[in-house]
Image (cartoon, rainbow over all chains, first blue to last red; front, side, top):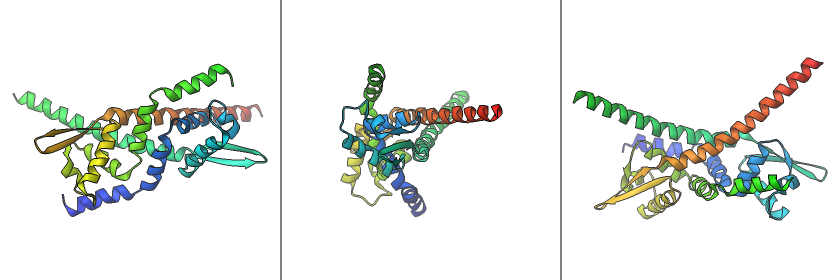
Length: 123
Length: 123
């Protein structure tokens, strides 16, 4: 491996790394994913969000905080009601990362298949 | 919220939940994502994978184990060489989850825009 390749791998790792770390980490919990699912239908108050889950409100608020820290969700308190809404950019960034890697993997498969096809034709 | 809606949310959470938990959690680390990136170019031995990183081989092996447990990667030891390859299904499942939710969010935006457009025309 050349020094240039090595530098390029390490630079790719550093780029946007912290944001992706916290977004993927936030998504690794079924309650936080269910909160995201429900916010896709529109903003909801914390008490509306807590309804289907058998957890106390402070526990739900902790999950909301994790989602806020990873910039997947934002919330605003008006009077006594805190309303949460989805912030799609972090979700889109994680999907873009996955899409890019799945595409790279599929392109490699296509190249391998084309190569095998060429070899068959030669025989 | 009706009991049926509540059951449907909880059932959605349970479905494939553990697999998604471990895949998202495995992806929340820059070294593990860099391993995935490099495996998109084809299978690699553990020592090839360790090359760009300034970490000891046992630490790299721990990351490989996490990726194996989440089914993102599989490895095979032949003689003294352990070779890793990408297993795309878990990567595809995480992308599918994200894609489904981003689409749902975008559809809601489209519906809102169409509604606003209709109201404008009425005025």
